[in-house]
Every structure is written in C-alpha cells, then in structure tokens.
Amino acid sequence: MPATTQPTSDTTSFDVEAFRAQFPALQQEVYEDTPLVYLDNAATSQKPDAVIERAERYYRRENSNVHRGVHRLSQDATEAYESARKSIARFINAPAPEQVIYTKGTTEGLNLVANTFGQKRVGAGDEILLTEMEHHSNIVPWQMLAEQVGAEIRVLPVTDRGVLQMDRLAEYLTEDTALVAVTHVSNTLGTINPVKDLIDAAHAVDVPVVVDGAQSAPHLPVDVQALDADFFVFSGHKMFGPTGIGILYGKREHLEAMPPYQGGGDMIDRVSFDETTYDAPPHKFEAGTPHIEGAIGLGAAAEFIMDLEWSAVQAHEDDVLAYATEQVRAIDGIRLIGTAPEKTSVLSFVFEDIHPYDAGTFLDRLGIAVRTGHHCTQPLLKRYGLPGTIRASFAAYNTRADANRLAEGLHRTREMLG
Ligand code: PLP
Figure 1: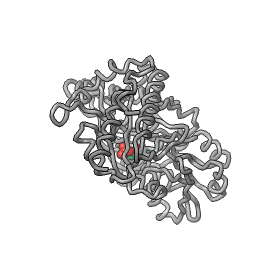
Figure 2: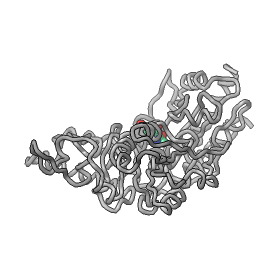
Figure 3: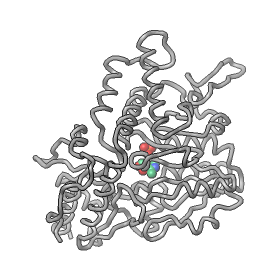
C-alpha cells in the first residue's frame, strides 16, 4: 500500500502539535517552501524555547564567572550553574548532585573515565569488554588505554537483527575482565540493550561497568541507582540541551578515589610549588572556566523533559517508530538494518541498489534531513558488510506525518535513482 493512504494522525494522548510548536527550528521551510522534516535527532536534537531563552537570559542578565566572585552577578551565575546540577541529578536519579560532573559531552566523559579510573583499574594482561555496536567514542578511548597498559579489548557480538548475544556473555566476561563499557541504546540500530542484566552479571564478578547513555538519556527514563551503573555518561545536545555540555555520573567511592583529569583553576584545595591538594568531586574534575550557559541550558532541558508526562511521550515515540518502520519496510528494494524487539527512535536501512549518500542527498532536496554513513560505528557496519546506512532518527516532536514524508521521499528516491 502506498505510504500516503495510511492514517497521518497519531494515536496517543501526547499533544505533539503543541510540543512541536515550542521548537523554533522545526517551523522553517528549506529549499523553496518545503517544510523541514528533521529526522537526524540521534546526531543532535532541536532546542525548545525554554532552553534557548534560559541560555539567553544568562547572557543578558547573569553573565559572570562561577565560584569566584563575591559580587552579585557571580553569585547569580554560580547559583544557576549549581542549581542546574541539581536538576540533572534529579533527571537521572543520582544520589547527590556532587556525583554529577559537567563535561563537554559523552566523548569527554568516556575519555575522563578511561584516563583516570581506567588507568588505575586496568593493567597488563587485563581485558576490557565492549560490544560490537559501540560508537567510536566508546571504543577508541579504551583502545588507547589498552595500548598504554598492555590490556586487551574483547567484543561481545550482536546477532543479525542487532541484539547483543547475552547467551555468550560467559565466554567474554572472564576472570581477566577488568572493566565493561557498553552503550545503553545503539545509535545505528536503535537497540535497547539489557544493561541492567550486564551490570548485574559484571558486578557478580566485581567488574565495574561504564554505560554510554548518549542515546538513552533523550528517550528512556534513566535511573542510575536502579541500574547500579558505576559510571553513566551522556550529552546535552541530544536531549534538547546545548552543544558542548554533557554529564559524567559516577559512584561516590569511584569519584573520590579517582585522580583528577585535568589540572588548573577551580579544581584545587591548596596549591604551592611543593604540593597541590585537590577539591572534592565534582569540582576536582571541572578545571578552568566551565561551559556555564551550557550547564544552565542543560539544567533547563532536564526540567523541560521532567515536566512531560513521560509514559505518554514514550507511547508516542514508540507509535511513530513502529509506524515509520512499517512504511519504510514496505518499499521495494529497501532492507532494514536493526530489527531488535526492544528498540527506540532509530530506523536504519539501505537500498539494495542506491548508495546511502546519494539517497540522503536526494532526500535533503525534498526537505527531509536524515543521516547517512557509518554513524561512527565502523566495526558494526563491517559486521553487516555495509559501507553505511540511511538513518532516520526520531524525537518526541516527530509525527506520523513526518514518517509519511520520509516514505514518500524514499518512493521518489527509488523512482529517480533506482
Ligand atoms: N555514544 C553514542 C551512542 C552516540 O550516539 C554518540 C553521538 O552520536 C556519542 C557516544 C558521542 O557523543 P558526543 O559527540 O556528544 O560526545
């Protein structure tokens, strides 16, 4: 059945039109009056008025450095910066705001853990367990660490459908495993991984687990205490927040025992030329002037998400993903990549006879923004024997109408380029 004859109205109670209206970038037209369909949310999401206005207010009214000044503006900026930390702690149910460390993003959070905790924890002959579906930022820092200390990288494989082979975990979680690093949700396949099961299995043999939450924080309720994650990292810009800001959550005992990542101002207790002592977490890990408006904007994004009725949003997101999946699956010559039973927000596929890059460029001229390529998961794409995929990734503001525009665009792509 052609995509256009399918119903366009969403079937859940979430008022998606009122929600969409809060995102100015979604209201624009591209290429001669073509309304934008934004389906590149796994790369970065659009920002709502609440976040844009909060960051703007900082620059208009509060701009000042934090933790340093006795004057009014510095106190206002510090108050906003630290209150954002409390919002983010609530967002992930961290036991205390001191366990929430501002970073540049997921990538920096993972590098921080590898270079501090990892350096102390992993030694010669040890193994670091990753999975086949990791983003490069959850591979390369561990490879660099393994090279430095003489450790080995092990990789838990995925099935053809894109599910972690948990039944083979015993082969990979061995007495030599020193650390596990795993993505909560795959940015290429959309698979939701059973991270709680992995964490429980790893903890049963005293192995700590680092969770890459870049793709889960925007779509799943995250509870770091229920997960019992040792570390959980994510990026602000994928969850309606600013770019250049992210979060590293860590268990208190780890953060206290870890050496600092960078030295400089704002992370010290006392400095002399003979010796320097460090401040407690989180400041120990936040050297230098931070991304103040980013942190404040991320706090606003966390509050914005916490104000939503999450179960209704999730039902809406699931509905749009399932609907889009059926529309795209029905198109001749298309093969879906990643059909795990537990999925969120990502629809990856290939045309048998059209290069993903050509399809992406053609879709762009129709006003449809998708991502093409390896999505920073080259080992995963190699496993599927592909140079890349076309990836449509959804956020809460996307609709069945967006899915219909995508399907129509793909029909036209096939007609024109196939
Ligand atoms: N991990 C996953 C699963 C991702 O999808 C991404 C970004 O696409 C990252 C890590 C890296 O995030 P950032 O570039 O914000 O540091």
